[in-house]
Every structure is written in C-alpha cells, then in structure tokens.
Image (cartoon, rainbow, N blue to C red; front, side, top):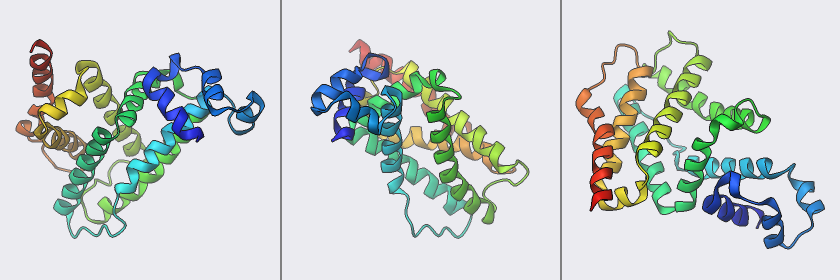
Length: 221
C-alpha cells in the first residue's frame, strides 16, 4: 500500500510538489509509523524509483544465450523496445521517470542516488560481462568506467528527449513505429561506444531528430 499511494502521488505531482503529509493522510497512518519505515520524502521517492527499475528489469530473460555479437545486440535492442512499451502501458512509470531525470542533478552524491547507481551497476555488470565473452563489448575500457559512460550517456539522451518532447505518450500512440526506430537509434549509440571498431550508421540515428519534428507537428495540429 505504501508503494501504490506513493507511486500515485509522485507520478501525478512530481517529487518537489508531493507532500509527505498527504501521503501519510491517505495511508491513514501516523508520522511515527512512516518514519519507522522511511527517513523522509526522498527516501520514499527512491523506494518507488528502485521498485520501478526492478519491475522494468524483470523483462530480462534468464535463458539469454546469444551465440555471437550480432545476436547480443539484437537482444539488447529487443529489451530496450520492451522497456519503452512497458512505460507506455504504465503512464505512472513514465511520469516518474521524467520527473527523476528532471531532478537528477538535485540528487547527485546523495545516499539514495548512490544506492540506485550501485543497483544499476550490478545489472550492467552482468550484461557487459556476457558481451565481452562474445566479443561484442570492448575490453580496452575498464568496466566501471564503461558503465559510468553508458549510464551518463543514457541519462543525457533521456533528458534531451524529455526536454524536446512534451507529449511523448501521445506521440508514441499516434506514431507507434517511432518506438522501434528510436530504440534502434539509442542502441546504435550504445553499440558505438561499447563495441570496438564498430562504426555507427547515421541513417539509424535519424529518428532522434525526427521525433522532435513529429512532436512539433502533433502540437500544431
């Protein structure tokens, strides 16, 4: 119950405008009970963020056995598409993701952010390890540095998209093909960073710019 009410409040109002007292009131509990489980609003917010990340990473298949680098990147693209489709099915996830990215600089170096980074690093570690075994991921960059580069790159891309496109949900609904092409572009950038000798295809990156044009057209209609 903590999770569902907090999810609803944070997704509709964002971190800054959400009132912890309002959440406590909706839960029908005392402040003492809330602070027994959570240190405060930020702690509860990151509890929701981590729960969302865990849910989204449940789509990883345990029987992931790619035979070569090509299959590895095909699987990466497939997982990325599934994640975006999950965001479309759960608007609350998308709203909180947007809010988290918007406020990410506020949380830099906080204990909660460090914990999220450690959790994400553990996921990326297993994924990159498999990629290196297949020759899909370069070994010339230390793993912890590569993880930081990929995480920062992904965060920067997401932040840019949210800044450029205010109507992302509507855009995906009216142009469902964008999900596949945009995801392909994202993975192409990740692959260009991760795979030694891989040259990115500019044509596969074009949807990143096209999504802004489509958003403006949608806004003017």
